[in-house]
Image (cartoon, rainbow, N blue to C red; front, side):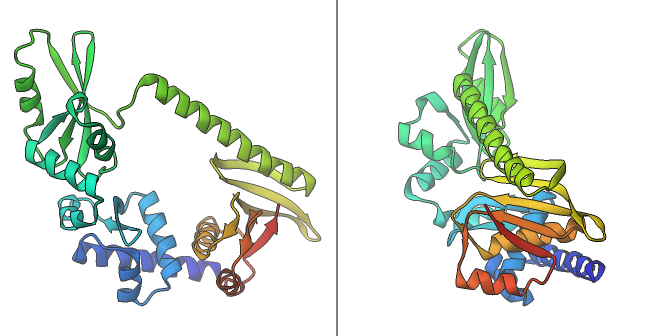
Length: 285
C-alpha cells in the first residue's frame, strides 16, 4: 500500500510540474482546483518540490500565498508586482528604472523595502581598496558591473564586484547565527526529553531549527523494534498543512510518523487527521 501511495505521489508531482510549466507562476489553490487535487496535499507536494529545487517559490504573496514557478520563468513574476505593498512597489520601480542602486544613498524606508523584494533585487558587494560598498541590482539588468564601475570611475582604487546572498553588518550576522543556534539547541532538548521520558530511542537527529525538529527513532513492540519518523512542531495549534506535510515526509521515508506537539487540533484538522489512516499518530507534549 505504501509503495502504491508513493508512486501516486510522484505522479502528482509530475502533473504539478507540467501544469506550472504551461501556466507560468501560479498559486497553490489554482493548481489544486485545476488538477482536481486536495488543497492540503497540493501544498505538501509543492513544499517537497521547492525543497528538492524542482520548483521555486516567490517572495511575492498573492492572497497570502507564494507563486510557484520553474527555473526560466523568473521574469514572468513581473506580472504580479501589483501585489507588492506600497513601499515595496516603489523600491521595485526605482530599482528597475536605475538598474543599480547604492544602498547607502537610499531613503531608510526604501532600504528596508528593497530587502523584501527578493524576486527582483540582487545584493552586490563591491571591494574598493579596503572599503566595502553595497549595491542592489535589478535581477534582469545585465549591465550592472559596467554601471557600478561608471559610478565609481572617479575613484582610483581597484574595484572588485561580487554577488552576495545576503547584505548585512557582520556583527548582526553573528548575532543572528547565535540566536539560531540557541533556538536549535532548545528544540532539540525538548525532543530528547520527550523521547527519554517515553523510552524512545533516537538513532538519527535529522534537523532541529526554531520551533521544529525531526528525528528517526526506534520503539520496542511485542514483535521487536520498530523505526518511526518523529516530527516535533512546538506551536499552539496544529493545522491541516502541518499534518499533510508530516504524512508526506513519512511516505517519502517509508516510515510511520509520530507527530509531536503541544498544540490543539481544530475540528477541521481532526477530521483531516482521521482520514489519514494508521501511518501517523499524534502525541502531546
